[in-house]
Image (spheres, rainbow, N blue to C red):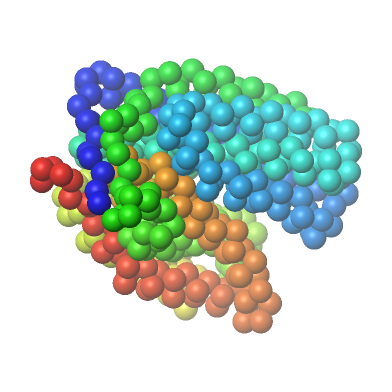
Length: 402
């Protein structure tokens, strides 16, 4: 009924190199994605799109991701994490380049959607594989480090966004900007994946039921509950990314600039939580830390919605900390059994990223009826639900008591 544990004995030098390589790959993934997103306003203007048409254009990204995420695990089991990341880059980066060319040529919406589908497909595949490698590095180090990799992704998005703002101010053409970002991202990713550790133990066997049939991870209760934890964390993060600035402007009557400051506070404290939270995970364990952080997210959400403006900014910081570790810890929990890690990561990632897709329209729908600020209370409700299922993230016991 259980798979054999992988041999996680690696030389210290190889593990250190893999750790640095994984951090670099996460960072360049965030940088490349943010480079494209930073030019979305220019894309809207160049193609003369309505908000609805822009939403349709960006939907191609989401559809591509939803296609890539479920199959990435099986691909990684066949060709390894390094080659799967390369495959994702080989699909997404040309997609970014072709999308830039299509925008510069003022192509029709369907022609731009095709390369954007490639971008989403590649990034979805890349994401599962880099999380798989992160879990192998974490298990080899025998300490929590996955949040650092996700902090690297966040840092990459900040760098990509800031650089994109500068390049936009300098009036650099969209095609040139994101084309250069794609080439740079592909080169850096290809270089660092050389130091990746093997994705799983080649001698491990998959878990089978009494009939001898391989269990689908979509039928595993623990995997699905971990997916709910990741979904709640992704919902807290994605809602803040998309709506925090608007909520402060509309709900607290701040200026647009102060709305952006609120978003920056959230991102800064979420990144800090990912960097500093690894020590808490090693000391207190996943269940205690996750329960505490989801309660923290609820408190932060309540302060943002019901507090005066000054207190709402404190609430944003608390919210950011509360949303920091759920996603990376969920990735670690899904990878506890190395032989099944790739398949389970695909399931958990698919469930989690569903929050990034459903979050913005849900908040927008509720915001039309009760206001965006009050609609943010859904984050608190989802976080309360996550508290109930947090025990699913408890580490699995391996054979031999390891």
